[in-house]
Image (cartoon, rainbow, N blue to C red):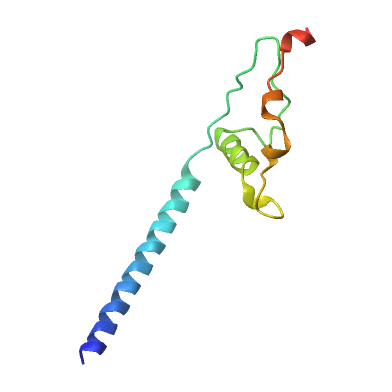
Length: 101
């Protein structure tokens, strides 16, 4: 009898936890959908124009954050050991823009 009562209690808790997870998931989706994207502000030197951006696919803060996460995500590689940034020499990415003026 005690085992049956324990199983019923455990099932109720599991059902309650499942319902709470569904509610939290729906709230998260609705919150993400209702938020308008934040326009990205280019932080470029005054003599460098911003890159061309398609009107139907603007650069947003959220897309830049996603791009950074994907760029450093090791899970996207075939062996799950390297990320895209590993193929680049990060110290060489800072350009001396005076050379190009």
